[in-house]
Length: 394
Image 1 (spheres, rainbow, N blue to C red):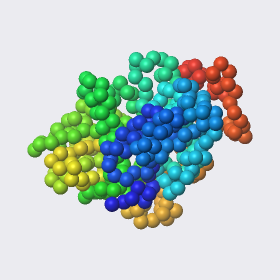
Image 2 (cartoon, rainbow, N blue to C red):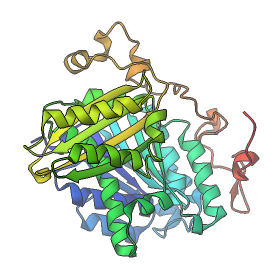
Image 3 (cartoon, rainbow, N blue to C red):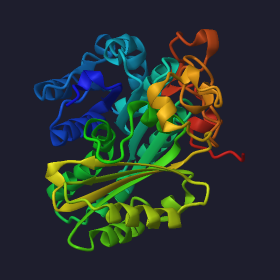
Image 4 (spheres, rainbow, N blue to C red):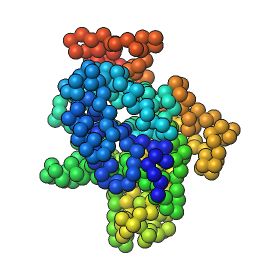
């Protein structure tokens, strides 16, 4: 069994919501996992620390551990004060999975800065961000939209999940059961990346291959389904096609790349793998890149779970797995490393078809270390069309 510090993979929870999700996932995985949380609230910080999860309290000198009060600008300043606290946790990391909740102060203000820092260090990033419930109103939605625009400037793969869709997918009526079920869905998606590396089955994916896939990811969605019984493979493919998180199969049809994880016990049959993959290939574009791996785990005995990440990627084709696993990127002459699986530290992010209207939080050249101009609680360094959520024609 790999120790968590031998894996070049880290889970980062940001803000109260993101840290809570990270803690829930950490508990459900029940295996060593490299993890760190970031928050501005000292009370929440103690909660995560009690779960043996390191949590960085940022902005203490500025906010006195009282949080941001929903002000994303305060969150941005807090992480700019203390971004150095994160650096020791990134030693040996190649890929980071970020959990954050958009619409409030810490998640919306801190996440763009963390993503930018990871990008500068050449670390591939998959950001899983939840969007506010509709009942939370347009103000929170506007904050979430502004933050997402800044995240897109440096992130490699962005999976944005509407909380309404996530909770509808649980099919639960009682709130406690719905929260637990929503956490299970997110845990299935996130921990797949760890399970593929630590519990490989007949078909494995190594850490460099996973890094490559996330670097070229772009906009992402994910879904998870499971089934038991003699016809479980057929049941699974039907459930994937009906998944609300995969938009009734539309995400699969539009994807340029798929990451498929099949989790099962020792009773998994080759014919079941074949049926699942044949069905998925039939739904995909002819040129869709499909990367799949199996996870063999006794806890999945008598059932199969499929976790599917759909990427609307415009990246170059992945290099051959054997080459990546046995050689450094520099020894693969046929594919430029910077375009396939390396971000050059400090380099420009590849255009993945996302809006370039977003202004990154640190994109101010020689003025990047100057505190922003704040008036009536608004950061005037952010263009008006972003602050007021005005859509411009592209």
